Length: 128
Image (cartoon, rainbow, N blue to C red; front, side, top):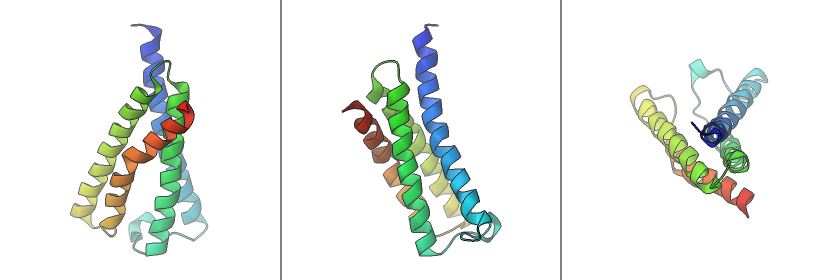
């Protein structure tokens, strides 16, 4: 396998991990500070969900930027792959929420709708 395949995979994985790790760490920080309730209690308060949607969208833009920066070639192709993966995970989140009622349905739907364009914006910011 050529080296660029590993670099390509790495760029996408690092972009994905950037979004996931930053999101989870921020959630944990807000829970630890008593701003967000523990995951067992669920998250149903609108301003908290809007805050989470905001920082997760920012982190998603960052993930797209990092993927474009690390890609060995065709950065927007790598960004599109990351955006597709992220959107798939977000859709799984919608399905999970519909089954388990972890919070209001608009929140995971908003994450799914914003996922692809947010990653795309991050990639475009880097490639301009």
